[in-house]
Length: 88
Image 1 (cartoon, rainbow, N blue to C red):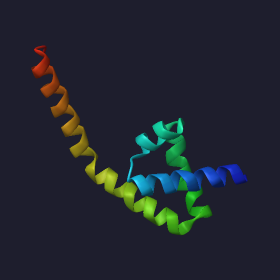
Image 2 (image 1 turned 120 degrees about the horizontal axis):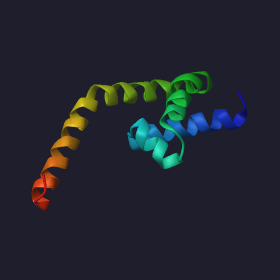
Image 3 (image 1 turned 180 degrees about the vertical axis):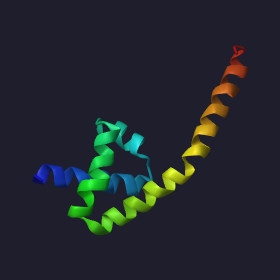
Image 4 (image 1 turned 30 degrees about the vertical axis):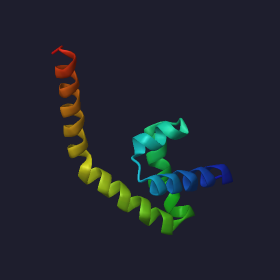
């Protein structure tokens, strides 16, 4: 693992924890794919910074537990917007 890979894993971990963001939002912020972010956070980060990985892991688990709620809210918002604009 190169220093660039280590540094990117730490940057992603710090950003994710500091902003309490999802993998999707972190990927969008850094301009990389979700799978790359997930790989960095779950495979490389534990080797580089175990303490930071524990914080990231807790946040990933929280996001996983809450994702069905986010999906429901997104659907609700979609239909409310459609109703307000007068379309179906």
